[in-house]
Image (cartoon, helix red, strand yellow):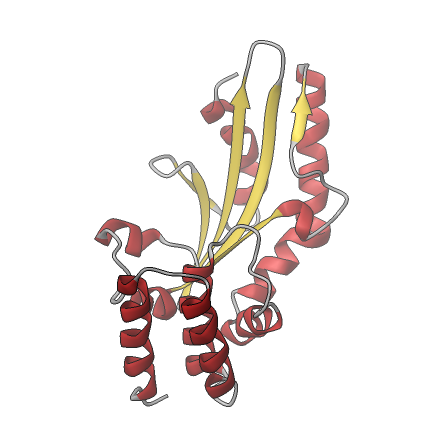
Length: 207
């Protein structure tokens, strides 16, 4: 079964909760005035086995617009970048990191399990994380251990920007922590300079 066919099997269920399928990105989006919720469903098929996995994400437009002024990324990536992506099994442990499928009936079981996950955990997590203040708390709580799906540079850029915008009392301390880590992790001079430029921008930003 093609990946597009498997994604289409999710369309009606996710559509009932306001998610639209975007074929060009092979993702489901739900728009908000300040960003969007995203569901990534990845299906890969091999002769003996197929794999199905889920990731959930949120994008806060203002955060992404700020950080990509200073990160060397293509403009189209800046427009579709996600502030936080999390594996489904890190949100609700009744779902595996990926389903291992050998038959169509196992695929059907996986779809039912995924729908149960979204109703009991997934949609609630997405609704919490689209709140920038909740998202800032999530980043601040993990300041010394990066989310599994993000590299440290993006984590630091987003974490410090979230703090400045949505909990400015956290900003001075997190600024110090992230800058220390950026320097100690052996980042390139260009990355360090980019982060310093971001900090200078945030230092003078009125919120």
